[in-house]
Amino acid sequence: MAIQIRKAQLNKLIKLAEGGEATIYSYDKNTVLKIFKNPAVLPVKEQKVKAMLGKKSRGDLAILPMDTVMMDNKFVGYQMPIVVCGEPLHSFTKARFVRDHSFTNLDALQIISQLAHAIDDVHNAGFIIGDVSDNNFMASIEPGHQIHLIDTDSWGINGLAPDAYTETFTPPEAYNAKKGMRLTEETDNFGFRVLAFNVLTRIHPFGGNYKKTPNMNTVERIKNKLSLLGSHDIVYNDALFNWSWMSPNLLETMKDAFEGDRRDAITDELDDQLAHSKLCKVHNLYYYDCYTDCPLCSGVAKLKQVTQVVVATTATGPKVVLAFSDPNVHIMLDQNTYFDTSGNIVYIPTGKSFPRRSNTRMHFASGGRYLISMLRSKLIIQNDEGAEVAEIERMTNSSYAIEGASVLFVDRGDLLHRMLLSVAGLQDEVLFQASNPLLALNELGEHFVVNRYHDRIMVSYKDHDVEITGTPQIREYAIKFDAVTKTWVFIYEESSGAFRTMVFGANGKEYDDNIVRYSAVPLSNIAYRNGTVYDPGIKAFTGTNLKKGSSKVFQCDAVDETCMLRLDGNSFIIVGDTTVQRFG
View 1 (cartoon, rainbow, N blue to C red):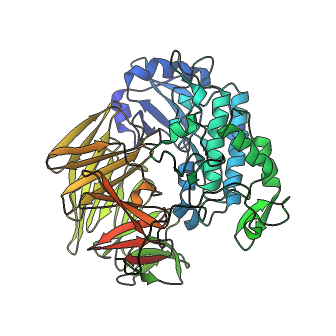
View 2 (view 1 turned 90 degrees about the vertical axis):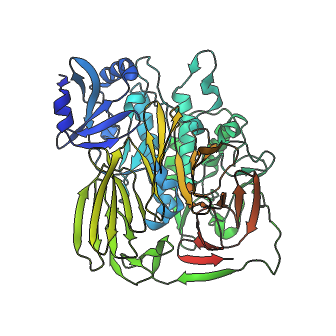
View 3 (view 1 turned 60 degrees about the horizontal axis):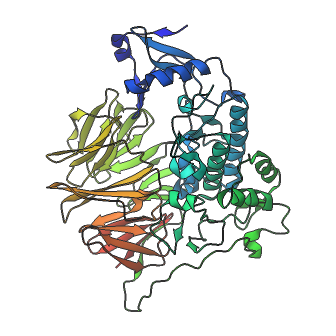
């Protein structure tokens, strides 16, 4: 029986999360309501949700609709089980996240193997997923890695086609100019291979730099079958990414899909790999035990790897100097903060340390006077003695920003707050209504906000509101402020794998292009100064002056794609996993 709800009742429910398409409200202890925003999608969504009612998945891994939600006798959304824990698989492709949680390739294999069986079950039940990408599946951090399949209302069922897909996980044959997208079990299987390779190796199979056409985006690479597993001149960091530990059968089925037209499921190959995983204690790597030795130890190269381009340098050039190192560092969070091996968060300038909260993002603010813990649906503020001074509810898993003594966050009512943390205490200011925003602050406490609506985005910063039409699918983003030019750069990775770079300043939007490609993983590792974006890569970083359209490569052996780049005067600060180094 449908849930009947009035607008006034809905407004009293706790809002848990908000996206461009829908808002999630808490309903009872075990369920939530997903309420759609765009009336245009309601007829198709209603058909799909009603077709899904009563359907089950193995182990209830797929978060399927339980009942419809009606307002004034009209369909507005549906009830579904609540997912209490888990991270999107996108997080498991990031080196710093993986290292912080001490995940091995066996953990990744356990997640992907479970997901393969779940997708098989979904297909057997008559569903087509359509959008098989790293943001539509979740896995828990804890051993066993419970998985969930989410956003199921976009799936296809009973002749109703899937209504979502991600270009960088979609094969060429899915694009049909006359009939629109053609999404099938076979296209799901291709997308899952891309996802599996990405999670198992932490690099997209069409990643790296294609030397012949460096600016070719990921979608064009997929269409031209130019993957890392083929014999192409593709440069990638083989010190970070490796797949020689996979079985010949698993590699073959991956290659046959990326370089050919193979579209069957790979569940058997993954199960075989999992059943025959053996630990190499030297590399802390689980390899296929039918090999005589660990492929990394024996130096056996299963596939061609192209030598990286080396940029010439001189003995009189800039030098790398170690700025910070400590044997107790587990993982650096930024140039001033780290988690230690004893389970504490440490602020380097003062030496202060506090116990780490599990599965929580933590930051020092106001020169170490305050410690902020960002939980899923609240933030906790402690002073430098460890005493709790505030606990504040926030929108679940929403964006936030911390810079200097300022904190930017969204409350449960979608109001954007800027909080000042000073010696005198906390000062909270409500700025304006937000909509699924991306947030940033500069050192002056000035904000940059990207509000996302179902038909546009709105960029708001000092004395400016700039509307950008369309609804881009933002996979990753970076927002940086340049104190020299007084401009903000906003870069995001599009669903095609291309990057859109925009600069905002006194004259509104001053630059907008998708020519520049970036290597930083995640994208927020870039730095921005004097109109130039600095992008870390393989033993070098590239400075691109956007308005001049020129770039310069700086050779630096201390850098890779996973390093954070920051600027301090004329020097570059390089934050690695366990050290901080200064260049220049």
